[in-house]
Image (cartoon, helix red, strand yellow):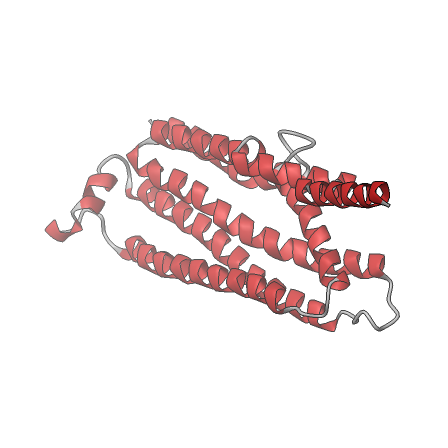
Length: 256
């Protein structure tokens, strides 16, 4: 059955390596993709940073929370990687203490078992590198926001908005890529149960990611926010307040 293992492995590599570039261009939907909509929302966020009163405490808190989350996930990845690396230097069929490892290795040669371990470690390492890079980029984003000019200074709002967006977007996207790597870590771990389980798990990982990026409630909500930003449609509360103010003015005019 090793040929089926290799088929499953090739299928996994195509899905794992190819899904991020495909999502970056809006696949499976050219429009209304969570990844693309969030880029637009972050641009609006950076514009608000430049136009509101010079108080970056809230923005710094949001980015600081993301740094803490990325650091936590990166540390967890590193611990699991170190723990799994011991399996590469253990004889799976040696001694009673091997236990579960011996049971997995019995399904095939030792080198195949080691390939499965390496694949799980590789998905975790990719996530670790993305989390580390996200932390670095978010620190750059904080410095860029802090260096942005105040409202009293002469400045080009559009140019500054574009510049800040170019720093913030990749930072938060790297964090998202690191989180998405866990889907493929789970799929790779199920290779221990056999190639069929591996293929099914890979399909489920891709399907779940695609659904959450395009058709989940969160994706629909972000899409609605993006449409509001594109159309500059005022919220319903603002519209109702303006209508109420106009009505009051009309009533005053009638009384006069």
